[in-house]
Image (cartoon, rainbow, N blue to C red; front, side, top):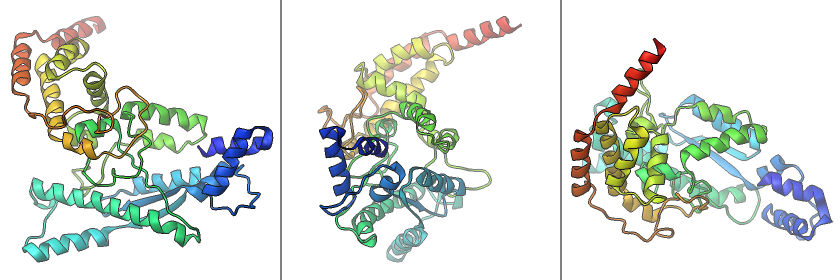
Length: 346
């Protein structure tokens, strides 16, 4: 966006539309009415209007923190790097003081309930901090007004329910809320070269992780491991469910043909059932999603975009039973394909 503003500023008064862009840029940047400021440098303009904040904890990796700082430097945003461990610890201690029980992470001997609660509190505190900084950063920089908070949850995470309700995915607007992870990675790969941002390459090669659990010698949290499916698989499920109006059974019958060469019918059945189970039991989160720019037909169906019910029987008794029956009766083509490929190589 800053690049487009800079291009309009360089053209100057050649077009009435460019004059409007320049006037809006001056207003948003907090310039006085008689200002002659021209936003011809996209990085400089970005530093005036775009604020980024890395809210790290003891569970955050040095690599992620470094990437955030390098990206903010590359685009020119006003960047803050902070640790929020003191706030997380305060909430954790408060709970322990009130109940007499101090929750622990799973890697430290805690239960799944404790582990999830400790992850959620980190995510929710980030939302609180984001809104506080959005309100007060202009004041800190000697300017009037406030800032919009941008969200960063994508379609796949929303459909799977892989987000905490009222956490850092909650914001005023989500620019990528209507885009799947697969398509988002394609755009990042394009932007790396089109916008001369080589730092984006490190984002593409990094393993997606929430970094909400302690990193140990034997364990590093991974989004796809937590979800039980890959982002590419989620993208396929999302298109079938939304664009092709498929339910559990029709999704299974279609994927038998698409994935049957490398997965057995039973494996496909388990993946389909897991997706629809998680989608159904987490669908209540869709009603509180941050407003997004809906650019694709597979956009998440929140209460503004799709008026279908948000409560479903999460185990889909008839559909799942039918899937299991058909999966048990179908031949396993994945092993046959593997045998054919092996024969070809020999």
